[in-house]
Amino acid sequence: MKKIVLSMLMIAATVISANAQKTAKKKSPIADIESFSFYGIDYSQGRVFGASDEPEKLKKVFGDINMLFVNEADKYDLTKLTGKKVNKTDIMAVSDANKNIPADNVKTLDGNFSINDLNITTAVHNLKISDEDSGVGFVMIAQLLNKATQTANYQMVFFDVKTRNIVTRFTLTGEAGGFGLRNYWAGSAYDALKKVKKYKQ
Image (tube, rainbow, N blue to C red):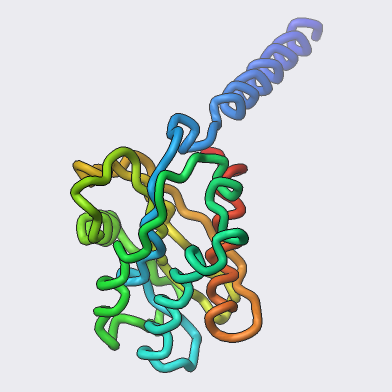
């Protein structure tokens, strides 16, 4: 009987130790990134679900949301939000992509819409970045803006500016909210950004 109890205790200890090691290994995916340049929010690959707004109105809102990183820089302070040094903010990198979204590609009837690896690499390679830029770049790629759940999913993509190779990426969900269409969806981006520092994988 003592041998059985001892064996059970040893198994339990092994499981606890394994779980502790697994937890200890989790760290921020951007832990090794010292600084980055921010290139805005790219909406060209994502979709809006459950909203009655016209595509052209939504496209204008996408541009207006990006302008908040310039016009309301104190609130959208990426150094405070991410804990990393920001070398520059250049929202013009996503301007053309957001303006040129085909009307049929703004909204979806699929509440589970998602983007794939090709969508992400395409968005990164299409960024209009100065040849003088270097180091790590950061772009938020919108995946699904879901009016039904009042949330939006974003791919947080960090990449090598020169090669456009992705260094790391992860998905964060933000809660939408605010007065007016711009502030409503901007709220989801801000909420997602607030989670960057604490996110571990």
